[in-house]
Image 1: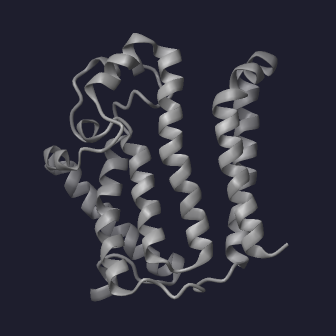
Image 2: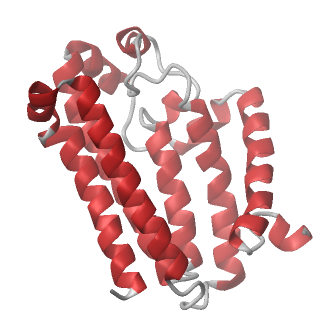
Length: 224
């Protein structure tokens, strides 16, 4: 199979199995095999799809679209910083995560990245994906980025429906006080500490991109 066709198939498999196992098939499979066994199967399927994607990605052409030039790199560089800030801010006190204390987290007034959107992790992934699509560097990058974008934004909507069923009024109240679509101006209200950690992480990740991807990213594109 052609590497790009294989990558597209692997990406579709990842997205499709994730949505199916996280939503429509989850309840009957958990009832049949138990929560622990289900999580094991889910992890194996996800790992298999990601391994397939990785192998196909490595075999696909690395720069067959030519790129969008300096403008594309500027846009991508700008997008990836808030993407990381949203992601890092979502790791604590996130009622969307399957962890104890979700109801308590959903009862509070939204602050920090949750004042921006109730799905900061998903929007962090979405901004990362958009930044790579804007670069228009290769079909392999576009295919993977599209898969991540679909997983993030459609997954966030499906997560709302799932949480409404699981948490009832607690999640409904959280939805009323937050927004699916980011309120970007509220990024200014995110703590200075989180911004500093985000900037440090962003500098580190974009610097590592030089070795991992062989391409200078972020500000290293101009000062590396």
